[in-house]
Image (cartoon, rainbow, N blue to C red):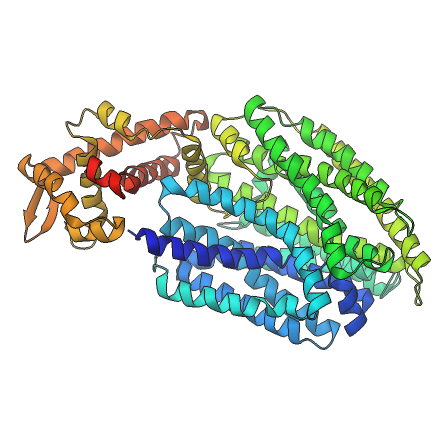
Length: 631
């Protein structure tokens, strides 16, 4: 059990690492015009963002498996090291090619950071308290989307674009120092089979298709053998990926998911939202700087209306969905607003006022926000327990993949329209064509959303929707972790602790304080079968003497046996603890009754383990002054 002080230190370090990874998705957007001026290679501009996104997408699939094989602490530290190496050499790059290469390395580290961070937090934060951290993580991703372009602009104007990467170095080193010293070494009992071939095939297919969309019409003519050959090769690789996934022991994206119309539609929606969001955010700062004469910092500030609009409808849709259970209206209406926003942006020119530009951005943001979280909510609501992890991570995977394609396609259209000696007018024309060509993406999203099936929402899904910010880290791919997130979210929404009522319902003749202490003996007796009051004191930061009377009561009643200050269960204590766990298990099943997965052995096993976590995480009952009263 981790002490409160150590827990807070670990969480702060982990969330700092996650923040760095989230920021680097958008921090370069306002720096791109200056990077191109410095390094050249304007036709490769989109790859500064795309390389990061593609590498991040692949690593989010791999890192969870590596964490199970080698331990989450090692996986987390390796991710930070990769991220720092990529950051340093990205800042050091003297050509666009080297910048793109090390942005890919940075993306590998960033993807690993975002996935392992959640797993590490789950290792150190009790389940009862985890919901508030999940909310903070979601909010942090929203903040990163807002702050990223602004920070990039500040570095460009006051230091150098290279500091958009160098800033990660001291902060990342701090994360390593804290994590190496404080993180517990948790070994997973799972020994997953990694779908290396499937991951390789989808990585090659995605990269090939992205190259086709970014090189076509710029590096090579669309009808050139290179583009045609690469397109055919990518499609073949994609077909091979489908075949491999049908035969893999633990596929990264099980093809059975696509038998569900809900998942298929939600996946396409997620892809389209990612396509439009990063495509727009990446290139709007270039317009603001090259056409409207804004500084890099000003362009970051002027991006805020887009993100504010996005956050408003993302939060509002979550609240409405949680109360009504109706979600289809949001992607349907949001897609039309998205298409309208893209069309309005195509009207921008050198004379467009600040307020009109801001208004157009708000419209695009409102449309994106309506569609942001619905795919994840719907998939989590309909997936069976065995597919809960891969379905959630699959939607996240498709959204990030859509982002990489969006940046590439937007960039290709932009570069095709921009002459070798661009003027302000030619920039206006290029942006006009780029955003106008993107309007059908919004209309496609509308058509897809019409096919989204409206199904009744589980109570657990409503709870998740109510606390969602619309921004979240990638899915873990692990059904147990996703179920714990649901339980943590439901617990966070509770106004009172159900512990006393559950204790009474169990029929165990113990007070709340006695039940709590019995559970702590169980938690701390894993290694040698016994526990000491000093261990409780160190974990709760409460003097050991506080627990002495209650411990003696349990010894006198025959629940515990004490020898030289070490307490262990008696036969009666073991039986009583089992009854407590059963009572919590029943409560948990009642709370998750709409999941109806009781015939799934993995689900019931997870419920048993989560029940033990809930019953043993009641640390808040014995902290501060409350300890004296309760214990």
